[in-house]
Length: 396
Image (cartoon, rainbow, N blue to C red):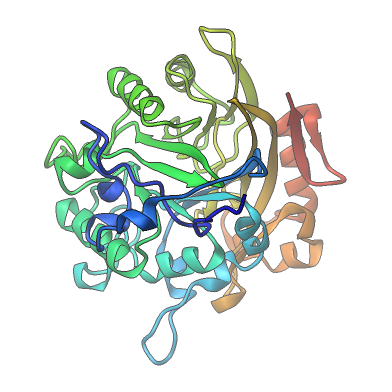
């Protein structure tokens, strides 16, 4: 039997499911035209793939130096160079997630860096060009421009990239209530995104930013399963900045997520890579946790913030879903002028590149080197890290 395939970035519509609203609020579909019924109908045969990969990179932290790297003499901006070294991995994944930590409020709200960010919307263009499908926006900086920032960012995503799923922020109750479900090869995956807080800025509306809350987590996971999600990946923005490992709060939230039925957890916010671990849910399931994948790009003046990670989770679908393997691939932010500013896989980095990394001009960072990055990964990740391949691989 032939099958009618949705495109790689097409979403499974929840229209008509009682009490669930539509995907529109969490993705750009809210303001785009409603799909016709025949566009939603998808038929799969028994040959549909039963293994999918989910990939995530960490925080895109748009300091002024990151922003300037893509500014052109004619006044336009382009940030494709930041993602060029990992674009092959990103586009090869069945579902690719990016931690868009700073709000893409655009030029009209005035660009700014630390401590109150507002970033060019061209970052979203570059993320889509690299192959990312999901923008994770629940962060402590989500309200740096208040509701106008959220409204501008969501308006951009909906108009410019209507197939990208945007999670963690909302501009209405309807948007907040919508479920972030994605369909890939006939299988439905939910992506749950939360933050611990918003830097003390009160929520202008209770639905503006999705916060970590045990009742909310349980309700979201249950609703996702009811809507047909076979897998749930949770992406919490949590932990202590620059901490070498998870704190008690991260562990508490990880257990709450696992007990709610989440299949894999990929965290961000500490700005540094933290270890990989497998915890056990209350039902006895093994749940892999990437405690923090660190920064993808930034100009933070610390050596450890230059080493982030790319998380990959392999899912097998056979009546139910199981995580079969996880891979953590360390990444190195290469601070440089203009389009030489980019992020490499550790395995592709060199001593020559490290010697030219502008982090070396920061106080206490003069000894930054490729070997320092390797040693840092070995210390942070333990014996499971293979320096020869530049990866940590776990198999169930």
